[in-house]
Length: 299
Image 1 (cartoon, rainbow, N blue to C red):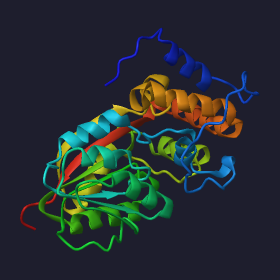
Image 2: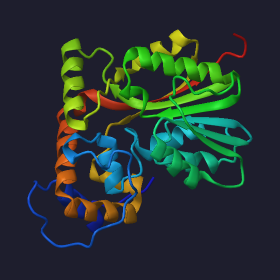
Image 3: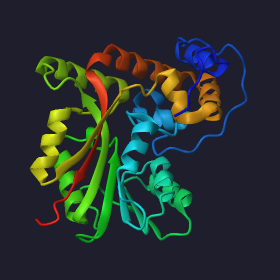
């Protein structure tokens, strides 16, 4: 984890940029190159929040940050394993997985641009396949994987779809295989239904995706209803757009890229400010959860 002193100029700059109103940029900055995102042609005000952030140059798009992803990876038996990743997106987690020297890596993403991006990024010494398909119908052979991982994607589906994706992970895993998820959560488990409704509505308005986070108890119950055993549970604050988390996730160079893009792209900056305001408004009831689930050795 990167530790940045409170007075570090990059942290101060990040805080100032993320606190800016939708005014004109205070200085001129040359346009920065950024990867083409799948929905870059959609007007900024209607673009899904995760692609807004990706267009700005943000690589870590997980609610618990890179640290929670690394915690999950450390809990998985990856070396020499056949690994499947659901919705690899821009390929950040794929790189971390490949560094653990699995036998094979298979990515499954329904977006064509993401498939091309991860295919290019993941090319290396081991067999890599990235296919365009839905996570609830991957087309992969039954009991063909030792590890399945999916991050920040179940939240974007309704309860029926969440269950279908988990069932697909269960089907694809060999007995004794492990499935790791990293998702947005609501806290505490006793949160009132009216708060859940308002939070879900606010998230949809801010990120332009019908995000449906669950409480920790609800996530575990869903996994167990499919047949998994919970063997690891982790949590982190939801601090996706807070300066300290961004520095830790993106590094100083990555934060500089994001900062320059924020200055030169006022429409995207307005979206980021709206998302961060929503996250802060609901900070007492938003968190990140990581679960490591195991398919029983005998089913």
